[in-house]
Image (cartoon, rainbow, N blue to C red; front, side, top):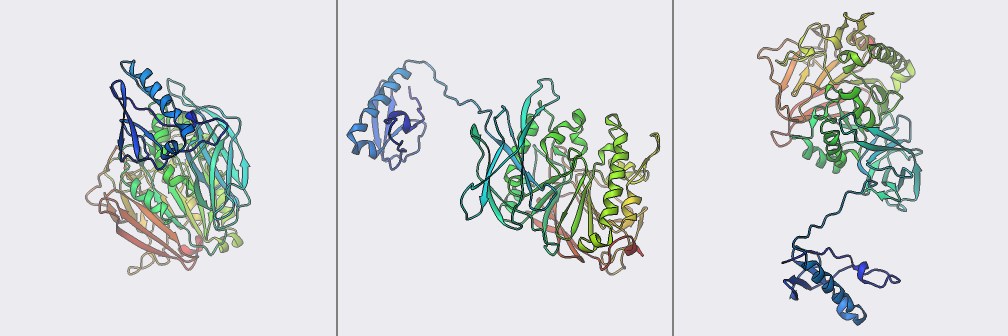
Length: 506
């Protein structure tokens, strides 16, 4: 029989001496039956038929006894009819690393998961090109118990980095003395209002059929994006298989989310156990467990909303009113003359759109949309969002939920308010809506109605995602990438606004 023994040189060396790795080997020891044989020409990696012998060992007679030890181990193991070697998972090993903007200048939030408790939650970091890990920040871990039948436990670690140098690159790893993550990097957000941040925007990405993921991974790693906006619906679904689908999804996006801020809002697929997987796994600014919040980047003020509070009333009708009052105050603050002059673009993101031309009877296909107009079947009646966003001059509204891409003409109250016939997005007279829910999931695409309403400008059922760049205080660029067409840009617009705010509509 043939056995495999993983080689750890330290096992066979004098413990008082530094271990020497198995390098530069040109001979391999094979165990076949009851004898040791050697074969030349092997590289140093252990393969499925043997263990390597190092030149160093041949050049050092005092190491020769190592071969005898290995042979003895093999002989002993050969007596067993079947050998299965495996390494159990290490519960203190960090995984599912992702970062988010903490909401105040010079900050970044690092979040990760372990399956056993650790004594500390630590991030070691330093400036790119400087002394590695010269800075240390500590945070805390919270126990999350999934609501499934197994009651699986995991520990969510959060550490906030502060006093970061704007626009500077940092290298970091996270964990504890019980286990460290891989080494990652990020660039601290540029605090300048003249900066032109670049975004990838999408919703409805699943653990199964995440068709756009590979392209997004590569584009993130070559530095194309400063921020990711995931507009609801993750994993499909994070709570399934007692939270294991959520674990797998968070591992999948680590190759993106460990490098750039991954900013989110909840979708309907996060609803299980009162959105507990979403609320525990992500770390957004504010004190609302990531349900709604706002933050500033470049010349934009970005607001993330929960549309799901209009649909899952069992979790509290009062959430509709709490979010509405918070949103009104946030918009009032953003519209103070000094703030709107500094950050004139106001952009919202929420999962379920107010408008869409899909043929699936979702809320956005109804004139009496809950998100747009509110609900009259609650006491008191719950207000919708369209009038409030229009009143405070919101420029751009990003949505998902429909597994398609759709760009609307500037629209309010089911009516089109283009800037002009020739240039509809130059000084538009109503907010611009983009629906981008086609990143890829197990539910595939949603169909469109054959004859859309006048406010629908462009539609596509291709898998893909949206790119956005806020160029300056007057120009914002959007384009749609088709993954089906190998990264081709299938739609693009410039939104140009010489004036922002409610008065810009007239």
